[in-house]
Every structure is written in structure tokens, then in C-alpha cells.
Image (cartoon, rainbow, N blue to C red; front, side, top):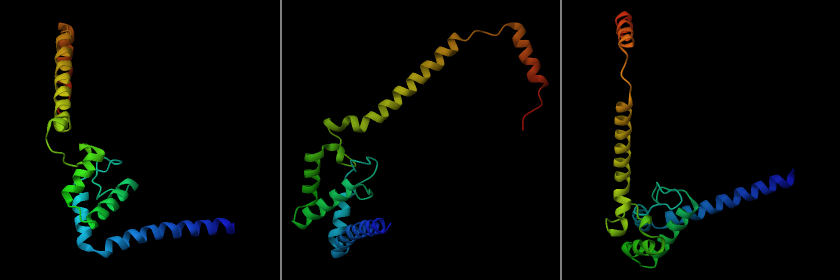
Length: 154
């Protein structure tokens, strides 16, 4: 029992100290941190893929923010850091990739899939309409009587 309490306290201390170093880095130079966040807003989290590195809490995003902070401290420009990240991870790492031959699929792909889905749906609906059997006269009369008898809707 005592051993598990000690282990739990040690783990809690380790977690708090890890967060403390991150907070200390953030508070040390607000201007640097603003530049870090500006660059991080331009990069996609490779784990979450739907968030920027600035918004993500994934371990990889935290590591990449630290790497950005380190490179900015070493004097690299924001564009040099973005170029490094693209070289390392590809154009997908950019949250808003430039429109060029290698990224056309990223920009046009979703619209193309939407058009294909709409075309397929329209064909399926037209195909069902063509294959629908017409109502027999007796069935049409019965449907008409049922509609006349039903009370009006709300």
C-alpha cells in the first residue's frame, strides 16, 4: 500500500516537473514564444492531422514546438524552419500547402470526390426511376382513395 502511494507521488512529481519546464520556456521570452506560435500555426500536427501544431497537445506536436523554439533561438528565420519541416515531413506538414504540381491532389481531391459522389447518386436515382414499374390502374385508384380519405396534415 505504502509503495503504491510513493510510486504515485513520484509519477505526479515527474508529470508536474515536465509541465513546469514547458511553462518556464513559455514564460522566459514572450516575443520568442509569439514567433514559435506563429510558425506552429502554419504546420499540421502529424498525429492529429486536423489541428495545427500550436493547437495540438500530442507529444509529437510538443516536441516540434520545442524544436521550433530551439531553431528560432539559434537565429533561423521562420521561412527556414518551414522549409526544414517540409524537407523532413513533406508538403503535408503545411497546414495550408502551396498550390503546385505535387499538392494539386490535396487541393482538388476533396472536390473531385464530392463530384464523383454526386454523379453516382444522380445515376442511381435515375436508374431506379427508369426501372420502377408503373402502378396498375387498380392500385392507382386505391392510392387515390386513401389519399382523399386521410385527414390533412399539421
